Length: 235
Image (cartoon, rainbow, N blue to C red; front, side, top):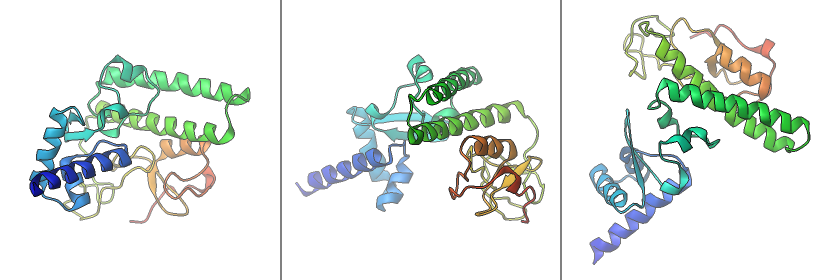
């Protein structure tokens, strides 16, 4: 009886964290959050998925779980919808699907700006929606750009060859910087800008577009002008 009660308690905890985060999570992530055995969490998630309580998404980086009513399945409705997708899904979309999603986003942004000029959208709602759409657009553009680039990846700091899966350079030991806009890695050769306040790095074209629309750092949220961007960052 105790085992059954414990099972129910763990199931409730897992469902709760999936609803709170509103983002697909792996079994490893959930086990870390609750300091539980990975095998136990994986078994519970598998059972919940079989019962249809959670949905298992098999992505290139592993299996992620989420509450089914929070997201669309990968079909044409997903591409046509204006709902922001979980980040783990973008990598698994084909370039054609990404281009389609991009065109839909651009059309949606144009319509949003038109509605704002006509007074159909409140200021706060306008800027929040615009920020979300621009962030998604940057992610898509960066993935497409990465797929088009077949060059060897090099560390941003020491310029040594590194594998794309690395999170830290095996040569200089520094963490691979992440773009504060598109949330993807920054490699040697990329044009980069840094926030004058928190020093967060971003691809230069991304942060410029971000500032035009939002006007503040995506990391620390402090406002600054494009002229204040730091082009060279001391490592």
